[in-house]
Image (cartoon, rainbow, N blue to C red; front, side, top):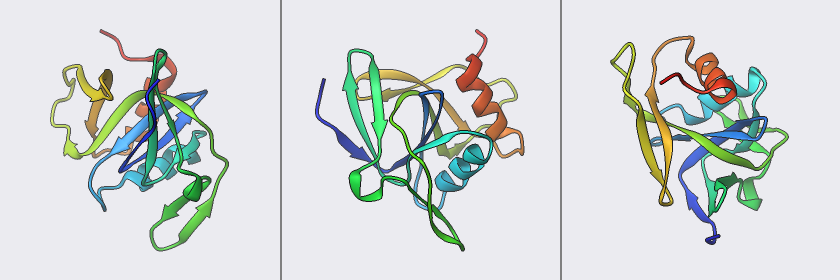
Length: 139
């Protein structure tokens, strides 16, 4: 297991399965995570996420100074329960998906490949992410 690295990303989880949301400031990382939390996901970390690579995959957790906090623009910092999760999916908020049925993509996460989705600008996107975490994606 390698020591933790901190990345500019947010992360939430469902039943220990995490989705790491990456992208530049203002791209909607926290907003997507808040939507997922409203649908039952648990906060892992907001804006900065510690990643630890191990034999069983990549674990995500919050740096101690921001554990249990998520920013809601125009509202402030909100308190939330948090957890540690294994990253099962990466969502890139900088890239917008244009394909109806996109190809399978991967993201290099500390030397391990994780499935990658690009941002979908539609109301169903948070629900689709939750279902992806619960049931995976068909080949």
